[in-house]
Length: 91
Image (cartoon, rainbow, N blue to C red; front, side, top):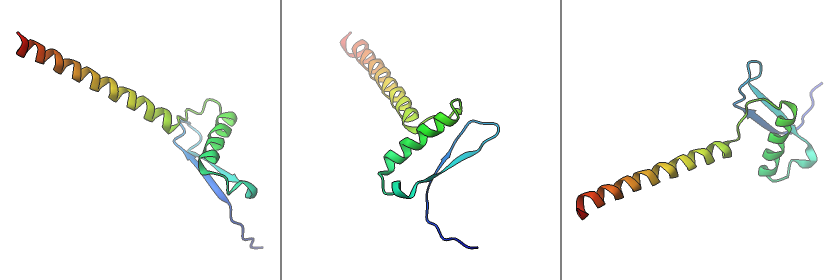
């Protein structure tokens, strides 16, 4: 028998597991019109609930860490340039 069904699917990859490569979640038909950000958040929460130590990091956490490192590096370079300017031109 052939059955035609449209499902919205959320695929989560990047899991640091020796056994699993990705998780595939099917969105309930009544919830498929929900905002994609809300669905993504619920999928991440459900994955963490099912596999608490999956090693899965959210992209926003990785992005935030990279942004903080970039800001710190920029501040250090600015400080070094300011010290160089003070030493060379003020003395």
